[in-house]
Amino acid sequence: MKPLVWLPIEKAIPINQDFVWNNLSFTKNLDRNNPKEKNNWTFMVFSSPRAWPKADCEYLEKLLGEQSQKMVDYPLSEDDQKKLRIRKIKIGSKKGVTVSVPDDEEEKTEKVTTE
Image (cartoon, rainbow, N blue to C red; front, side):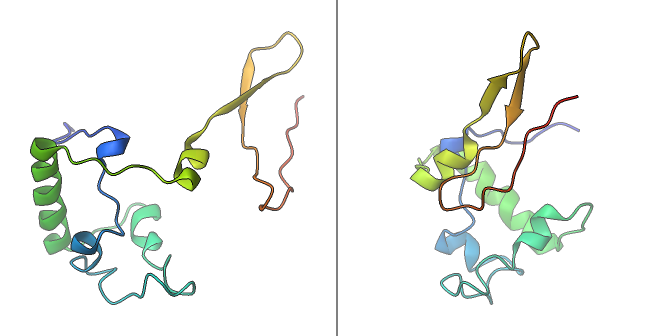
């Protein structure tokens, strides 16, 4: 498989942009301001493998092709930046291990264990 478009993260088009949200079959009827509905689109993206409607695929391919020429910036929110941070810790003399560190607002139930 060969990618048709490769964009740096700050050039990636967010799904919540009106011109994306209002045109995809699995988002256009959702109220993104309603906490109960705003994440109902994720099943299409995070469940795999899943066939997408051809019209959605063609629309996104066109948008991404245009973006690869225009290269419009879509700055990441502070929340998005936090989610992308990679944290490493050292355990004794072993190599660093990547861990997920929850924010203060999140439940602190994650644990790091070693053998």
